[in-house]
Length: 122
Image: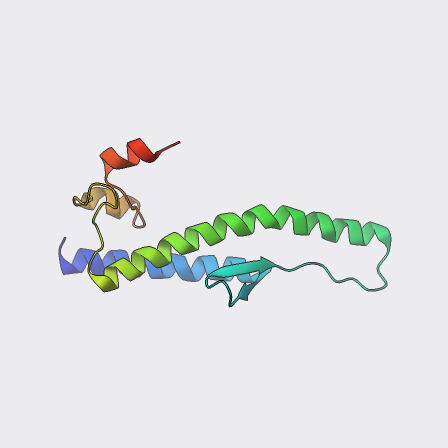
């Protein structure tokens, strides 16, 4: 893969990372331990009536799976960025062969080549 394409992918990953962090920060706070973890903000409504409190708790429970999904995406992006820095980006984690440029452009955080991805899909 040429340096220009790799730079394009790195830029795309960095932009997506920023977007995910903004989205997470709208309803969660970054937790320092474990690294990369976010915690959905639990509502604190002193003096609020029961109906308002129930709505806040419902929103909290709705945000938990969203937090998990966004955290997972963010971890994959961070891993891909680290691989670019380590110069190991684009190598399948299973067969250790190269991942096609087309696949990486479509899915920059891909960890597996097309063949191995098919084996790992569930």
